[in-house]
Amino acid sequence: MPLTAPQTRLSQAAGMRYGRFMTQSPPPGERIAKILARAGVASRREAERMIEAGRVAVNGKTIDSPALNVTPKDRITVDGKPVSEPEPARLWLYHKPPGLVTTTRDEKGRATIFDDLPEDMPRVMSVGRLDLNSEGLLLLTNDGGIKRRLELPSTGWLRKYRVRIKGTPKDEDFAPLRKGLVVDGERFQPMIVSLDRQQGANAWLTVGLREGRNREIRRAMEDIGFAVNRLIRVSYGPFQLGNLKAGEVEEIRRRVLREQLGLDADGKPAEAQKRPARPQRKRPQAGKKPRP
Image 1 (tube, rainbow, N blue to C red):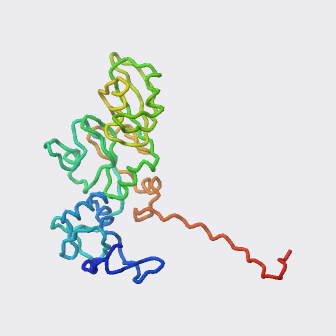
Image 2 (cartoon, rainbow, N blue to C red):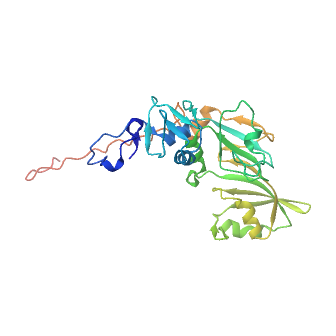
Image 3 (tube, one colour):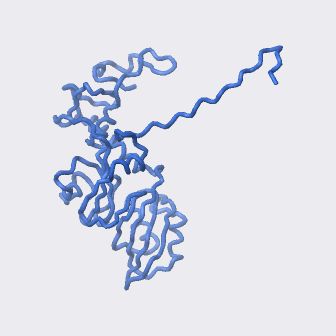
């Protein structure tokens, strides 16, 4: 179970239990990885890896386990730098141009999307990725919880792409994509594919999918004999690329963000409303007849 910062020296093996036979009340505060994610440091999983690597300290002491609860009184540092208070969740639309890598650091020294962002942008994370040669809509957020939530297939949001392929396909050629296919042992869910127009030696398509596997559209097209030479994401759920020019960033209004993601006024996920308790009918005592 998670410990509070003052309890970091206590061993979990000492018999702390919660629930039906609890011997100690649940610790106050929130998991440290969640706090780091909300502060825009990294996603929750990435924050856990940073903790295990010894890059995070609480009240001056380095921690190596994410099983820790912290409160606003605790002082948290990452790589020796203090972590600021979590800001309300924010979301931006970014038109990624081709030729940029969707990562904070690139081992090959290639330019990243973060090198292209305006200087006054706060620290943000990308929701999913677009590969090096892909372009179009990329969502950016300062909240790791929002990032994870939007990346999950369970969100059910449709992602639409304008895709240009080389060749003169027929509509029936895309039947395998509509049914779902297996590429290199990996199963792709059914896609929505429409053949829009032929333009010289190329054809333009609109493709919709609800998951984001690595180079999914390119690999699927290659599997049925077509090469993608341009790929533009035009929407991600309710958010549209619209007239946003390459390299431009536009913030989503917080009211819209709250409505689309079900957040409260502070930018946190709104708690599900509890259903009213169902009235229980009293059973008649033995020997007594129920009232008519």
